[in-house]
Length: 432
Image 1 (cartoon, rainbow, N blue to C red):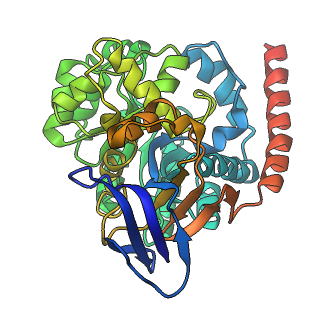
Image 2 (tube, helix red, strand yellow):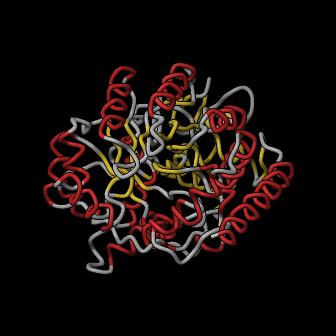
Image 3 (tube, rainbow, N blue to C red):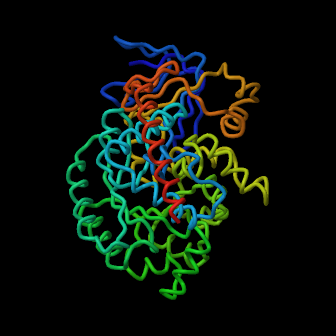
């Protein structure tokens, strides 16, 4: 395949080059050449009116929860979870999880995301949907042991890892839910499993002030310091949220190379606060951008997320986070956080052809003042609806149309399951 006469190629390479009027040659799923006047037998895609950029990387999700969009609003995290979300999740089975995932993938492809990092249970139907849809993902069986059932969950996590460790687009990981839903034994055994299989360790971290205070009351430490005491922190650790990190916490993360998945919209909607991203950047703590689930966001649009991420920091100083900083978090820095930066996150020769294209005819991108203005428009004005999406050079969305998913069937099944979930939660509330 040849992407021909690309008007603007946003490479996200180390120099952050934006190239004009160039071609990209793709062979066997990889970018083999970037240059002028390239030729190739086979398919040629005219990109003379397109922006071409890396596929976006969403570093923290619970994609089956697309079935719970708008189910619970106007509550703090603890009430949101205990009163609505945990009860709703008792209705989730493999069928609903599968269709919830496909619904999320449709939404992500519409807005340019090609890779996401997910924790859920059950996770096998998530993997089935990812495999069939053709996207890329880091997936983990979410684990808690408030029910005292750690052994079975660790075994399921182990089986999941072994089943997918050689998959070309699915990277298995280990995911205990949080310090307040996992015993110290589970947290440590999960780390042993991650070490055994050399996977990421993905956990919610200091999302709320309440989480911090409970951990300090119980363990005499912040969640980060507690996990450090348990020898969990290392350069394969991803803490989702990190809103209430102390200076000591940030230094602990810096020392071991651990990273944070930043979820600005979810944190705002649940009243959790605003993570101090400039402080993390100043300490060279890796940060990727994320949406969390649509139950708390309420969408998976990474362009919208990037705008919120930048504006929230600019409330103190308009210079503190630029459009390039935001683009980095949603592409190359997200890939680095997931340990996939040798493969994705930028458009360079030898890397996977995970690519998003955008029409320059879109009104929200006009006018633009040079390449800097183009980047500014992508972050601050673009609505996020892309034209084409490729993963490993395979088109998953072309001219706005899905190539691998029957959206009508997915929406019909999701409506059916959402009705069942809504009725279940209503019944529970009436019984209380």
